[in-house]
Image (cartoon, rainbow over all chains, first blue to last red):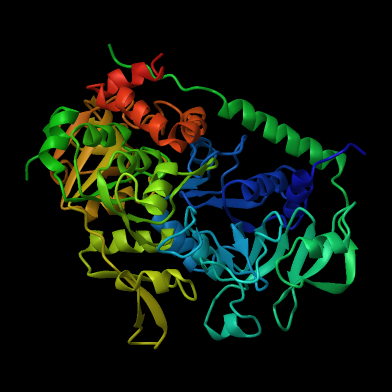
Length: 263
Length: 285
């Protein structure tokens, strides 16, 4: 077996969570890599929707931004952005959403807005984007984030996006249509919500990872499932497909653009 | 109704974008009106309320050059790269001046534009529930109850910019404007505006527009400037690709106040046309 990085393991683990034929709302970065890896391996009929308005897109290289031309040119249809959020997402037509964030808490709530107080932040982050409504409406939400005690926190500085609120029945009581977080995929393994309390519990780890090291990299006392499974290492085919995709992407993003001006 | 005036970029911005106005330069990754934004910077417009779903590099530049006192937005990063350092510096350190935020989600901004385009006082959606956006932006986010079902929904005030500026592929001789590809919230931002100004890649005798294409009728457009490459370093489908390498390089330029100021002075303030800018950055074939 070839060596692989924890980023690659994380992307492969996220990709495996996507079933063929699902309708998936894709965010930029690692979610986009995972969704396209799934499409290029076990889920060729995965329907990818990017919030820019591209529906059923099959990019050959990963987009740097959420509205690259590659997404439009390989899409089944390109529609106005408001319709993506109303006719598709709010109408309940999206199965899976994929998000990251700067901070997460034990109930899968996310912060992508500020570190520090909102009015005087030490770090101003990009903000909400599509996240609050993606998390509200998709049938199941997958979260991918590198884990550290700095990012997996006891209290969020700002709640940009709702996972399970304060846990228990809070999400359902407040009328959220979608099912909430199904799994958090980290560079150590996977956390999944307890079916009753909705608190995230360590349920799977990658090769070479110990339960103690995961607990040490968490800002709250992380609970551990009765049985922690081991996630299978990436197969040669998965690694090859991912690396080819990333190589094509690097080459494409390095190209400078030249415009021909009329004389 | 009469069609738009075909004017220079300089004249289009000077006539229609004035200090203190609420201005939306829309286009989602695609068709971002960079040339128009640069001209607004050259004309040293001040106290603007800038509206965009994704501020992108163009608002990073306008904020860093002191054009704006308020920002209405939903996602302020350099996509796939990281921070907008000038936006961050304005929020974190009030440089070069303080900026007030009216912050939303994408779905919320879409609802606000759609309400503005429809002549309604507010837009609504199933969104924002349980988020701290509601707490920090009380004057622009409220709850409304459906009179039929009793369901609680989120209401947001309509957005109706004084001026919306779009970049498009083509205008015909009458001034009808065609946008193709990813259009983001351009349609709603155009219809919501009191005044619509457009830059285009080219003027043509006949638009390359199948039935149901997104064509803005000439009588809704106040002015058109023909500006080839006007969306660079974003892109115009069918004309040129997004310069992702420039977006990556911007991170280093914008990170430092002095380097940013020098870059903007050389490339924007000291150029007089967009063609000159494109040649200087090496974007011309």
